[in-house]
Image (cartoon, rainbow, N blue to C red; front, side, top):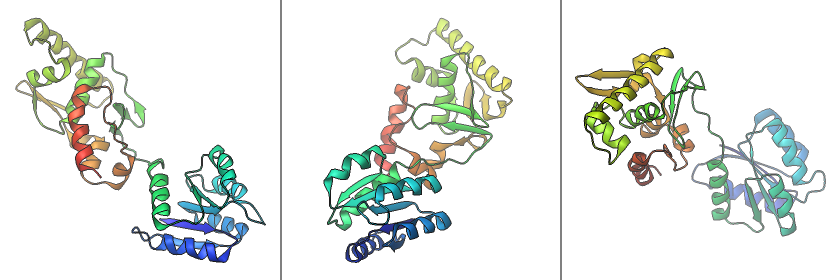
Length: 265
């Protein structure tokens, strides 16, 4: 992680740089007393976090932040100032953080954690991808697949959730229909849902992600790039992308969401 600190007061700047260098993540930290020098550095090297004093003579922090965002849009801005009346201007710029001097290492750590948690994390692109964080979608080359039946989409989501395990019709039915009886009419209705799912996958040329044997079915996890699977393997991008919401539309997904809340920190 690259951090730049900008403050025209040498003592304050050195203190801020020291606090940043002491962070557990051991970031690369560079300090500047002149805004123009800081901007030139960002143009050449980029920056993940920019901690900026607001009240500076050659270029104030608000202007500097705007220019940094122009050349490095992914940079997170944290304003550091001795004057609380700048807060409104900072918030208008959608700054990631706002600190009043003097600051402590805990203050810095909290604001950096917040800034990083709100960064847009790009997941690797794949031909077939399942996105489970928030709402569920199946994508082909980045375009969501349209399902003719919502229950067919939910069935696929449930199989994704089961991570390759073979699931019987009765078990899948119980998850999707909860208290409905698994009688003959409902079995026929569920058969329609399964056929609809298979037809949708076939129409989109991705039948290989679905298997059915002896009345049981599964998704083939090796054929799908899934954020959940990446998360469970400890993939950093997936861990950072997860915000505590998992397949929000489906009640049965709450069990996995609870597991993630307990085990993914």
